[in-house]
Length: 439
Image 1 (cartoon, helix red, strand yellow):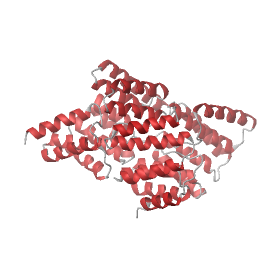
Image 2 (cartoon, one colour):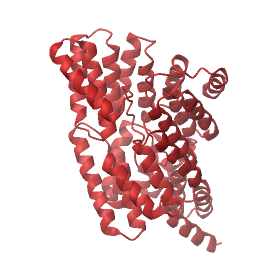
Image 3 (spheres, one colour):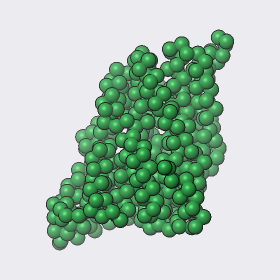
Image 4 (cartoon, one colour):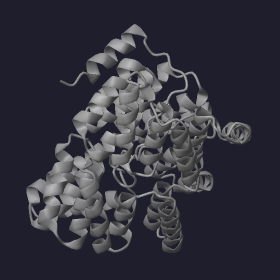
């Protein structure tokens, strides 16, 4: 039985909201257009400059105390956090070395090292390994709440819906606060409960006291607004997040998305450029490239796509497996056959709803529409109210000659979010108009 909505209501009413040093849910791409919300489960909640100082201090300490297993685990977690803040995957091998050294020094019941290795595996998109490390940590210490956060993220990305919900519930039971409420919100949204997701995020915001935590919560609420087709409300939310934490790059990129949806493309390009200068995530590069393409700037678009490919190569060289993002990019801007190859491999590793949608779209782009339709139906049946999924489903049906179904899904996509993508939303409107004219 799903307990999340009841427990969230109870927790909010009782005020059981206090949290400190919360692990955040990874910044999850809610559109399905790029990225997969890959689980970067943060360790220390520290600003960038403070984190750099903490890493330096820990390194110096470990020179004097090289056999300090907890110290190596802390350093490993700090490296994972630094990689998240900077989008620099070269920190991952350093984290791997530090965490394994901790585990070698203290092989029995080393929950901090196991949890850190799980967070690192999530960051590298090695979700089956992340699940295994988290389960080992929980077996050693069932009360160790951060391991449930890692486990929830891993199971979500693996497509283990019941297991992910259970892990989130276990986290809520042990630590009602930012880490648990934000994960509950993502779980609820994915299963078609956006109102309950918002309630969970409101609870998370009420529990937050650190400016970065508040910004994170406001950003997630703004993402709900944006994906519900309310870019004006979303823009307000992103700005409030930046007021809490001017260095919150996801909110800056979100502001750019909302500005683009509202037609303020000059501001959108400026804010995307600023976000990418701070944290060059492939998602931001793809979004800016598509915005430039929609504005008739092909050379600027190609520049972003080249940078995206370079970032993906750098990530792969540091142990990150991200066939989903690369497959999504190839489907629309490269080689659909290569997209299908990449996404079939990803589908074999995990039956996540984002992968189902991405593979469906790649197959459509390759002309394999009947197989694509089966996967598109799987993605939609998951329950997520996602304009991109609906658009993909409608275009696949249109290619198969299923006119009424295509009209329904394209209408639903544009009703859910009229500006879900600067390239695809106009195409959806044009194709819907053509289908309507044929009546």
